[in-house]
Amino acid sequence: MTKRQQGFTLIELVVVIVILGILAATALPRFVNLQTDARIAAVQGIAGGLRGAVGLVNAKWQILGGSGVTSVPMVGANVTVTGTTGFPTGDTAGIGAAMQCESGTACQGNAIDLSANPSTWRPTTGGAATCQTTYDATTGVVAAVTTGC
Image (tube, rainbow, N blue to C red; front, top):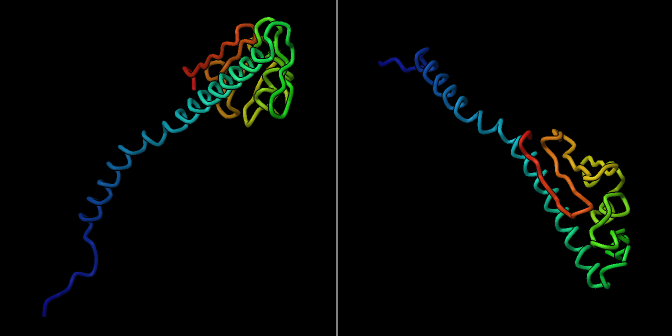
């Protein structure tokens, strides 16, 4: 009668562990970088939303007659605009209303600061001066900074 093998040898187990270690070492850096990519995507998403809101408000301002119009009715709220450019003002009644923000410090899961021009829009997790979107109410320019995300 022949003797049947009942388990794995120590060498077989070591080989399997080494192979798993090599696979983990090559796959781990790909998963670690996902948080940075997510923050960059959040900042770019905020910028896209702001650009869309500014464009819609400005287009409606022009339709209403342009110069002199200081309030533009949009879905859900009236947006305060500058009478000469038609860009939403940088406060809660302007860009905050255009973006349908829930308060002057939070907007759709993002931390915002509307107290200065340009106003800042940051992801609540990982947002900083080098990972944010800014809105300049004077020129209507939206800029995304993602160097420190």
